[in-house]
Image (cartoon, rainbow, N blue to C red; front, side, top):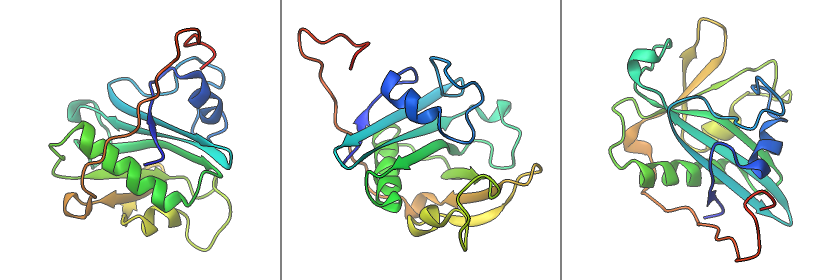
Amino acid sequence: MRWTLSNRADPRARLIADRHYNRQKVGASQFVPPGRCLVLYGAEESGKAFWVTSWPFAEYTKHEWAGAWVCSAFRNEGLGLSSDLIRDAVAATVWRWPEVPVLGMITFVNASKVRKKRDPGRCFLRAGFEHCGETKGGLLAFRLAPENMPDPKAPMVRQLNLFESARTA
């Protein structure tokens, strides 16, 4: 497990979130949609990454996968294979919320905003997601069914030392 448990206002993750194409307000202290969430951060000498699983209440959702967990943001800046990080992030999500929604997990990819490649969303496909349609706005939708999810796995917990402030961590 390369992920550590984080939060919606982690300044380290926020810096990576600011470089993600779906970031609405660059520089804002919080970078996660309202509601239930799991935020993961990973950092090593080789690189950094962040992940957000949102679990919006179905009644406030406007896409056809209402009730599913949503990978609302993922960015890998050299931490390792993205598909491995995705599988571990899903395992951490199952650890956090053991009752998996019937629709599983969904993510949306804006093909015009990602690096040009043969198949946008490739890292999600390699992690077990399947292309399942498009949103009304033209985003590609990828879904991971509950039966294809990995077993639960706890993320690491980073502990601050006595003289380290949460602001500089």
